[in-house]
Image 1: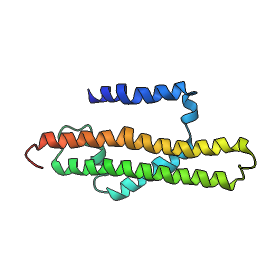
Image 2: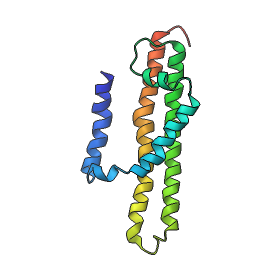
Image 3: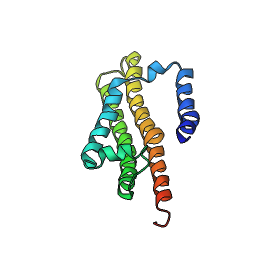
Image 4: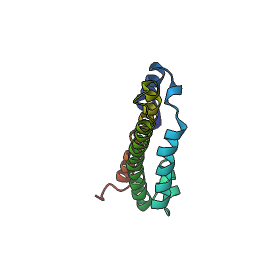
Length: 151
């Protein structure tokens, strides 16, 4: 049920906006995804080395202990922070590439560099606020339901 609500009220309006604003193709940029998503996954593997898989699977598993739920919440909150941080790092990389390439003399080349920089931030925000944050909130709710007497 939560997945249906999430798709209906969160994903559908975002994807519709992408289509309406000129097509979804302009929002696909492998270098931006590479700069944002891969380092986020790498940091999460290193930081949660004993709990990486269980943090991922705690989202859909029914039988989850308190420690795994707590680690899952930490995992998804950290994932949000790192995705947004790496997206800003990617923005800076794109901005430096744009300014270093002499595009100010030829403004026709300015747009693609700025688009790559902006899409990197877009990917970080999508990962952080559309994926990781709702999952962390869902796990916090699951944790409270499983242990209502603990604060």
